[in-house]
Length: 429
Ligand code: IMP
Image 1 (cartoon, rainbow, N blue to C red):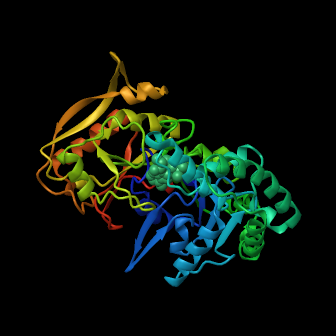
Image 2: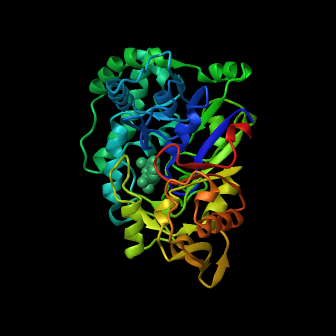
Image 3: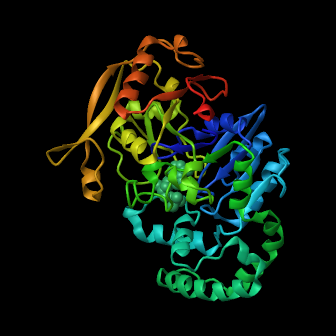
């Protein structure tokens, strides 16, 4: 399989950055296909640390980056990110970055409504990143969104703003917030247009050409399967489809172009934001995982909730996401724990489930059933082969493979790029 899609198999923050960076160095083009600047990837290359939210990771490796039509693009955030990485020495030009002309734009009114709604939800808030992601996707399906290509058409912009403002100002006023002025928004967009339009094109055509020329494409997913708007823990999810199938529709290639699907999972579980989390730990072990794993959100800085590995959930993500192989990250964080637990299913109101059912109340009531394993006293940190791992750590990985019904094709044992056990190269299929 020439191409690879990388997706998160839990609730995000699985350590995709390191894996994507390694794969990007072996790809010709890296494509983002969903989400927006709610994602956060930290890439350490040499003595530079790059924090990317919207830009495809391949840019760090000098590879062509493509932002597909499935992404919601905040032009202000994009331009500031470009300025930030340029200051760090990266070359970002219309030769190295292409943006789908049919991608939806995030305007200042989107984060305003996102935050106002979260405030109004109070205790029942979703815990969004406040970046306007949800409202922008709502506009897309409601057929009122402003898209990249509209920046070249002032009259279209003006008419679409009228429609948008009718909707947004009504809602914002109802929530006790300041309405937006059309003139300010229009002027802002017209000023941004000459900076964004040089990057815009029908990316599907370029991807088709690259494919036919036998180039390797890496599809870089954001968020994760359990945050998928259809398959995740709805309504505590993001507003896009995060599964690998979206790599096709979100960039304009056919489903067969997606290739090998690599799911990324941490050796334990974390989540930011609200919503069900059956294996969450509120004790010293949970705190230890958070401290050792440096579990703070890249985008919002919020501490992540931590818990045991949930094999029932990852199995579900494997099936739904079409995962061919799993990359297991942060195994070293479990070093020294005397006992480890793996969730194999849930008791919900007296019935055993091997998956998380769709009902909101059922998800909230899920009590995990655990299999208990002995931990290891040695160190797995920095291991680069199975022989470097404590025997019990190998058993832990093997048990996870059995339970999630997918092979572990890569194990990451430290943030360093080379501290990786590579079982199978995803580009080789
Ligand atoms: P939104 O995507 O900002 O609408 O947030 C919806 C939910 O997805 C919240 O629980 C966020 O914390 C979560 N979320 C969004 N992006 C990420 C990510 O990149 N990693 C982890 N969680 C995320």
